[in-house]
Image 1 (cartoon, rainbow, N blue to C red):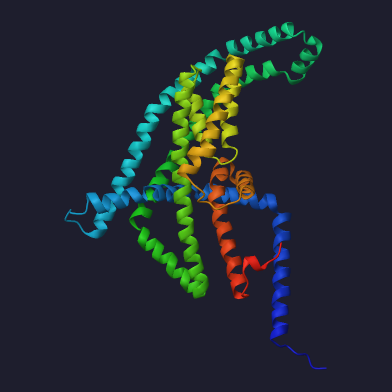
Image 2: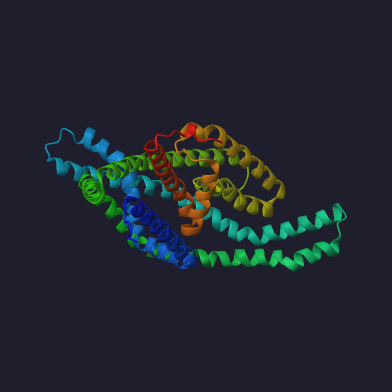
Length: 382
């Protein structure tokens, strides 16, 4: 019997081979999950200066274009010299803005942190007195309370935490100093990206059309435009939103006359950059600190943060960001968890816009496949 190797057989072989290859790949990924994640983390740490350089260039691109088009427009310079000068000015302005912000903020933060460290033993002692008063007032079972605190050894742990925190802060300061070279490298990478951005984009575009069929290359170009819009809208919008929340938090805590208003506001504003879990992460340190000082102030702080985050989630956030990600809530939660698991806090923040791009790419691919089959989503039943 003669074997027929027709088009149908070729399609079946291709389909079965693809399924087998995907199954093998998935098995390899799951069986070596921790090795792969460790390798990805190492690679991320290795190329992080260039990633941060790209992020800096992304943020400074618009200021550079404004400087080049408005400020340097009439200067008798060549186009490439205007671009280089505009890039240098944009980077210098960015450094000055960040430096001014840190110069105003860091001294007060350091004073608040050192004050907290110095007063921590007294706060812990007052908190223990408060617990004893509650036991007497409400006639609680002393043996159970003693057993509970004895089991967790909470007071010794608090004392150890605060006594060890200052030396650890010094160690972290040395580690931060050792990262100055990476910061410098990131700034230099951002400068070169800004100067040569059109050439870099053209090289990527040429490689795209050289490696892939035109239809696929067009798809990647549209994806790149969507990615630019998503990152531009989300990162800048979220930064503005978090800055406003931090300022409002400082004003509110000052009006309520709560201690360490600046320190707590910086924590709340910074963690607000993280979707979903940010408000909870920012509230916990403040509640913990105020609980040691005066428990009732911890309640006031928690209620104020709840009101502030409701204002952010229902009014300020939608007003600034809108629904620009196009992601269902469950996928936002998924992106935050996966990104945080792989790359920590940075991954929790970056994971959402990255997954929004992946989601948009898959959605467009699905629509394309349905269109080739002359089908619409409405044609598919429930």
